[in-house]
Image 1 (cartoon, rainbow, N blue to C red):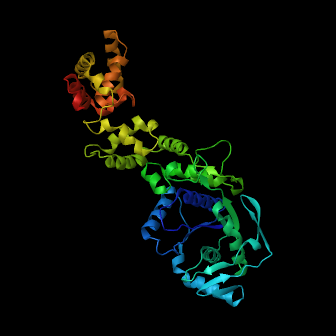
Image 2 (cartoon, rainbow, N blue to C red; image 1 turned 30 degrees about the vertical axis):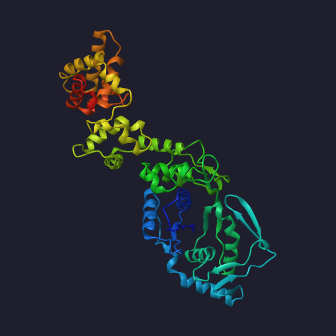
Image 3 (cartoon, one colour; image 1 turned 90 degrees about the vertical axis):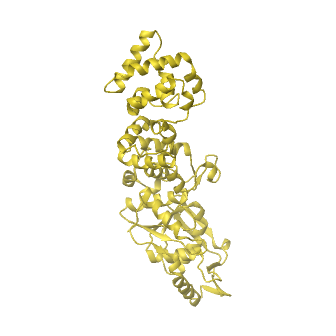
Length: 432
């Protein structure tokens, strides 16, 4: 049976590159009916913190990643690592150096294995020095504890980043020395920034938690991550984890570095927002509205949902939403630069005053009736509808662009629209 593992260190938040590794391992396990396991590499007890572990597990669940067995904690297995090292000393394969234990690397050997992504790889043991198994403080070395645990967990395949390629020959030596069959290895090219440099904060956030906070949907982030190095073919891009499981093939993974593009991720997110149900989005949007300082006491989910439908196609991240819809949640909305002049124009004020009077008679206050009135009034005055639409849009929203004006007015409601139009008509544009 396929058994793979994801092994985070709880010394910080879940990095976007680590999240990609988790996603690929999960896809591989699910594709072949195997098991996806977690190993918590918390041997660095000074830097490991429970809050980081909690956030890592939360972020994995958020991405749609589940696991099949209770996580293995390396911090609870120090005695086992030491015992295994002592066995190698007794067998003459390792030796003591003070309080440390080192593995004796046999020289003159070639270590070969077939990487699932890169193909055949060979290393000369002459280039590998004797390896630390147990450090002088009694803690295990990374490569040794990994091998001991992979054997204990029955790991059959290891999918990880290219930065581990140099660890693989050392670990193969340990598998052999412990009488274990080495797993199959696949090393994924690392994620780089758009400019080809190491991915860093200047290319966007580097942790899953940051993307969650910025208003990215988990489905969009997971989708984008598994396309960094693998393609489902047929020029398909929008693909759920469940759909990807059915066709994932590690042999089809790209052997060159993948470039992370925040603009492309934003496009993915926008596509998922367009398709997401209102019941999923409204609670999340409510959080962002509250964080932006909006008072939602008089705004129920139905109202937020109506505003959402006006702006759904314009949103790239959920955090975009509050700035776009300020006029729907407060009367003292900001007026865009240049908008004051439009509202201070006497001619525009007269048009707005006239419309306010005529809009009073519309009942019910629907967008079709409002649009009909605008166009009729423009025709009567011998002007283009835009000469009414632009100042009215500024009066009710403070913006020159946005959703359709007539649909906006319907959602805002007759009372609010008339109040704002009268405010401008009476010379109070400075209070908008």
